[in-house]
Length: 244
Image (cartoon, rainbow, N blue to C red):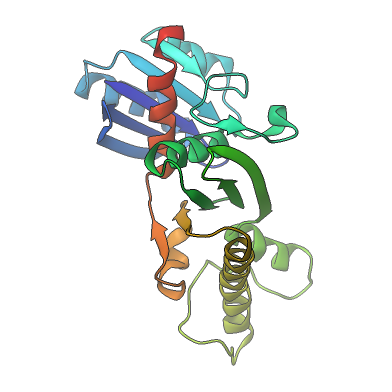
């Protein structure tokens, strides 16, 4: 069994895979990581390999706690991956994006795939039918957009995200919700049109913690996959087990 540990900017995600089947998944704040790790260790004693992917801060102490229990593989840009990386600065490519593209390479072999991850940032990653990762784009995430409106103005409130079934806001709060959510939807549809102009038979995957704010308003040819990043990390671990 494999344990996947994905350290994000706000949460740590833990998942257990039996080969390629997801058996368990849980999110926690970093302060609760040790207790959740204990919970997983007791519930799944057959775990023998672990991959750690981190885009947030993860201390040496937390990493040592994992290493004291398991064989640990810490993902970096130098590791073996199931695609050809043509990014001009591979050392700056985040582990989360590497994992997402790995999932696309395995699950959608020989296809043009655009992966959209709606998280702290919104990332766009493209892998072509020749299994070449060409890059993509990064823009502010939904929460970041709400916070920026409050931070850089005197009077606009900080709101919790909310998708409205309308496009004209008749109050300041509605205008903010529509501006942020519909702005992201229009951005995604714009990128979709650009890629489709240049690449035939494009497959589009939407994932990430904030994807649920967008799904009902996006076109039907976008596939939602909440576990895409975790699946990608599991593929990478399988790909590198001999180095653990």
